[in-house]
Image 1 (tube, rainbow, N blue to C red):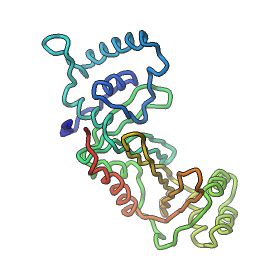
Image 2 (tube, rainbow, N blue to C red; image 1 turned 90 degrees about the horizontal axis):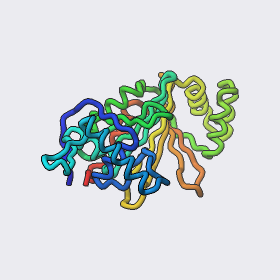
Image 3 (cartoon, rainbow, N blue to C red; image 1 turned 180 degrees about the vertical axis):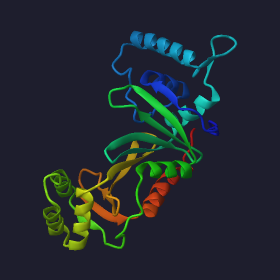
Image 4 (cartoon, rainbow, N blue to C red; image 1 turned 90 degrees about the vertical axis):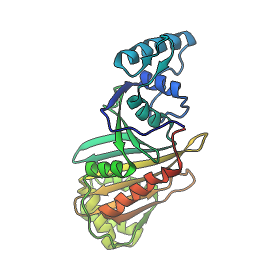
Length: 276
């Protein structure tokens, strides 16, 4: 078992080839969120690229040559974060927008630490790895970045929709006023008060986001997902079906504490998973 104990450190910056090179050294076969830069390449091309990548990693200090000049090793501070990012059996993709600013990243989770992997933008092939500390520390940091307020009206019942119908209304919400949107929600839910609250939150939202929690089964990633909407006074948690033969969506009012506890519970389910 790899040791994952390490103090917090500066960010590690890797392009996709460097990431895959280190993942290969560590024996990872389920690197999540990073496109394979060698897919479709000829063996000769891959060998040449790997030599170039190894040279770059040595120059960065992310690889170290042994005394015999043949054996390679990874410095402990780099090893800790890369091992978790490559081998953790639990991950959470997060994308959220707050006041027009969008953030997207993967959290790779063990029972000891959480490492965040993020890209600068959709075009770049460079990835940034940050050690966020324990699960509790990582959860608190994410909640600070989301900037969710306490929220009110959490005693209202959940609203049930067809996922397809809700998505259609979500897309139309830019062109509808609050009254019309509220009526359309109420036609489905028969809950006037809840429909008005959800319509106002959707129409005047200060932020929104998605979470996809994935667990490695040994063969593939299994995923469940949730989303949220907030407008400074009311927060809504949105859960929906992911199976193609199902079409349901549930929107529930939530407070900051309840939402944070849900996220913490999700991430803490990794307590039985570890870097192997």
